[in-house]
Amino acid sequence: MAQKKKPPRVGDHPAFRRCLLAVVLTLTALVVVAPLLVIAVQAFSAGIGVFLATIADPDTRHAIMLTVVTALIAVPVNTVFGVAAAWAITKFDFRGKRFLLIVIEIPFSISPIVAGVAYLFVYGLQGLFGPALEAADVKILFALPGIVLASMFVTAPFVARELIPLMQAQGRDLEEAATSLGASGWRTFFSVTLPNVRWALLYGVVLCNARVMGEFGAVSVVSGNIRGQTNTLPLHVELLYHDYQTAGAFAAASILALLAVVTLFAKVLLERQGAGRAGRPTLAAPQTLKAETLK
Amino acid sequence: MTRRRVLPGLPLALGITLVYVAIIVVLPLGALVFKAASLGPEDYWRIVSSDRAVASYRVTVLSALAATAFNLVFGMALAWVLVRYRFPGRRFIDALVDLPFALPTAVAGIALTALFAPNGWFGSVAGLAGIKVAYTPLGIMIAMSFTSLPFIVRTVQPVLEDLDPALEEAAQSLGGSDGSIFMRVILPLLAPALLAGLSLSFARSLGEFGAIIFIAGNQPMSTEITALLAFIRLEEYDYQAAAAIASVLLIAAFMMLAVTNLLQARALRYTARN
Image (cartoon, rainbow over the protein chains, first blue to last red):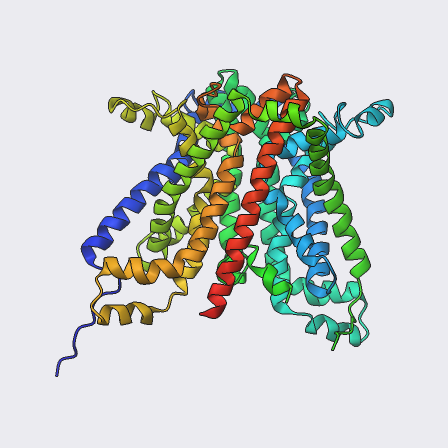
């Protein structure tokens, strides 16, 4: 007797499938691929000479340097914070843990402009410490420290939220075994905890770096946009664009677009190692783990 | 039984965490709230209820709603295609979904403007149909959809992957059509994740700045978003108005954070029960 043919799965009718696939792929090409393509085309629209001239321009080079220096300070500090926060939250029980988790997540939902304005009211002349800093001749705003602080605000949750779900899932048994066998806390961390979370840590660092290097809104408020002094690369893109140097703006933007593509590539490689979404439970969002963390 | 604490490092780890959170997150937000509060209720209300501010809320909220609605449909379809269909280039598309998060917002802003400007690739086509995109609220909506697209895809995708095929088969054996099975079996299962994704997407759109200012036109009363108005007040050295308007955005962000947390707590209970 011939087996009764199973109907195709929902949405698997060939005609429907083909239509949906065509619509989605077309829209993806229009919405996601086209912006990348237009950057490349515009960057070389005035010829390779203009492209190279923009990259070689001292202001562009200074902007690149400032962006790299900002990342070199903000990303390591943020990484130390993320590891410390994950260690405290997943390996110990203390009051106010839920509140702490929410506070760490706050920058994720706040407009970068609000972050910038908020920093102005701490370190600006009209802010809390402004007059005292001015008297002591310490420059925070419109200088590197302000740019670094604003970058650390917008990326505060990046490393912690990759580590916390994973370290929560791994429990405390291994670390407790290590310390009961006489290993010091640092030894336990470096030989037991770190090897287990290294890919997730790197994943968080890669995403944090991309955001620090690309941050626009918050940095735009605190940097003062001083050409050749406090212009990061994204701000330099804006400056060139508003100067009607469109090809130059896109040339500078193409460096950041390249950074984005490299970041995506690194992300895929790290996800193959189990970092990122694969390491998180269903529902993917960072908040998911809070409820479990608090049980 | 209380668990005996054996691991070392709590004082150091918690110390670093609290110092960082206090200096980087709590202090500036506290300063902003303090500044806004020092205005006094009358001045505060006058600033946040001015015609220009209200017009900026309207264009921000309406564009964010439209962008989220577009992402609801497109994000769901994208997640569906990535999970349920096998086709060449699927992994490539899957990786590309995160591009809006990886691409700096200013770069996205000028790229979208170049595409949708009247002489751009898409803008010239839309112009033939008499539609203006760049420098109109439609442009704001497009920039918002671009920057918040990954939220819905990434919250729906894992739930769709874990969906039990037996549920659909049961519905099919009972004679349900594809459409009714999707609406009455699959969609309710996706709903908690979908709502969480929608609230994240909407919250991000409310606060977006970099991608929007290039394409928006930034005309007061029509295409000026709230974040830009706060920025303009700063540039005019009107710090009180900047504080008041930024505080409105802050309150909106906290409300969305509460909604998201609530939805996710519900979603978690929902998945735990099933």
